[in-house]
Image 1 (spheres, rainbow, N blue to C red):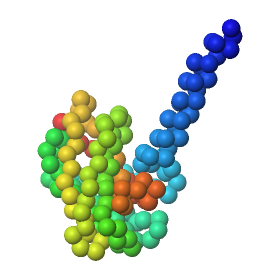
Image 2: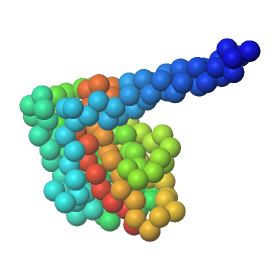
Image 3: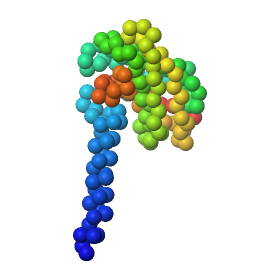
Image 4: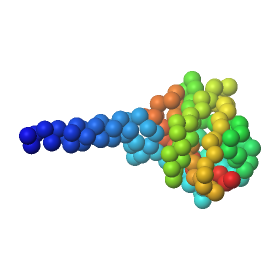
Length: 154
């Protein structure tokens, strides 16, 4: 009789553990040991393109336009990478204060180390929203080395 009461609890704990492992492996920033975070105080993407050194060597230069960044309108995304030349790159846009859904933009290679694409940021109910744009070479979260943070306002 007591075992029958424990089974749902054991299943729930196992499910939470599996969810934790899944999120840590698949979501960007799960293992942030090598992830360089560029905060708005260091460089504001609403004012200019931002650069960051990569832990593997080289640099990432991200530019989003128009400025200031709107929501629910197309953003032109330009990325320059030195020291790496993947076939394509994804940028994962995630809300820092709240989950805003799965939002990734694929950037196509236009020249060695040069990528372009388009993204649309969802609107947030808050007056201001902090976003984390994580650069994922060929969409692989394990290869992500830099995350740029910026704020949008309604």
